[in-house]
Image (cartoon, rainbow, N blue to C red; front, side):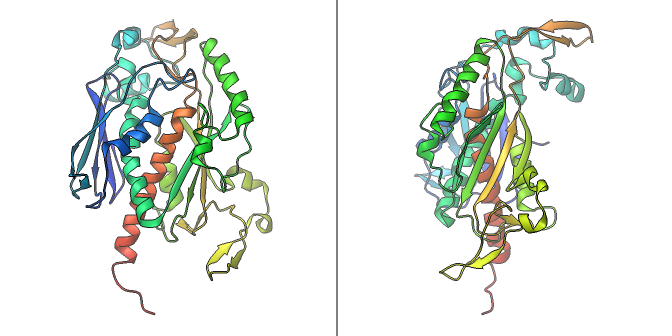
Length: 366
């Protein structure tokens, strides 16, 4: 019922924000992949709360446990279960929200749909659900790197009106991780952190844009008509909490160009490989990867749960006000970076396995 993503590399996430724990079941992972809890933990540490003053102050180690599917450091080809237990829960912070709906949050729609909801920390609608995605994404990243040398790097591109100049062709993970914002442009990052700090002091929140580049993606990933690679990437990224927009390559800016200005002309490089002079297609043409870098962007709204008083209604439809309590991110962008990377990795890994199954099973004629 909407908790499973992927085809051959398939994940199902489970758990609530203030329940016993959260995690993921991964089905379809190839056997004999060397993987450890420590490797997965690296990605979870990038996502975890309490990293800095510009993230939620909730203190969780988010220590992962591999419960099944891995034996003596290698995947078995059977379902992999990864569990992260919730430790620092404070459900009492949300008692008022049991009856009163937070503006722009999932409270009202969950009640309307299911007639019941876990109001402690948002339950299933909390960004804590993404722990399972990031854990699975760590495995997908390793498969992609091992089979095809794919590298996926996300970073903060914009906060509110401040946008950083970043070259997706040259950006490095080290530069991304060099500051608490995960913006590899140090000067822009400093300004962005200042306005997030101010929003936090004002009990308010800010949104922005995460850009992500996938390098060394093989040619041929994606399928017409409904399984175009950019369509699956859009679904994966747009399924993240607080995401409100997606674009790839030239995106909406490309609509301002003419065809001759926008088209990516072909040439043959010194190795005989067909390349494009420009990359306004964002590495995908006709729904299929063309071997160029895949460059996409995801827009995230300001965090819905804020400490400022707002007009709202309760479950009875009575008008009231709410100044939310609890521990919340003044800006989701720094922690959204590994989430975007994870969804991109999950989509690419799934399509890589699908492409191998369909197009590499029988030998091609010379």
